[in-house]
Image 1 (tube, helix red, strand yellow):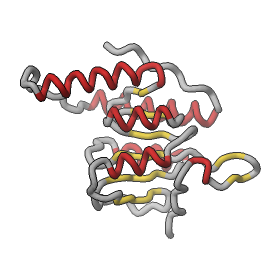
Image 2: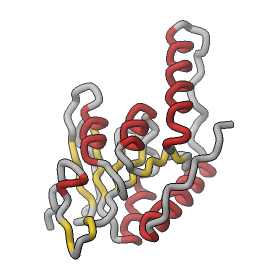
Image 3: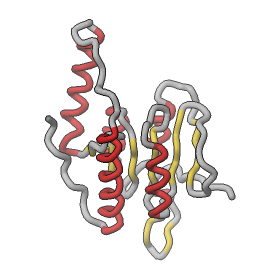
Image 4: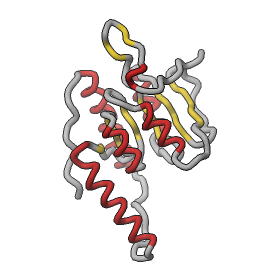
Length: 180
């Protein structure tokens, strides 16, 4: 059964009884370690999922899950997600610049480790990311982020479930915790 095409922008979504179409989960999928968990949670809540990658990526045969091969251009997948995600949607990414764009568009954004990005935290997160990029390019810092752990997976599942429930209740986004 084909998946309905994703509207170009949140405003293009068809309305039903004056209410916007359901929340959609967008996955920045190329290096996402929690895709399977997202599929399970989305199925439990009956939410559509757009799995966006630069190239072909395997997805489960489910009418609520659509695969988007955004192209191999620089930031093609990020641009595709940022053009469509908006208020009431959830974006899963570890890409800080994409998270910033989606937060500004009103979407809820969660990193695969469960860390939420918010209006209050995204500026500092982007600044730290840029500083670390500069330090790595100058040779000052050679290590990367710590490896993904079962604890991160559990924190993500909890954050995703809480975000979906909050959106369904119509409650405002909770502020993100202060960076460590």
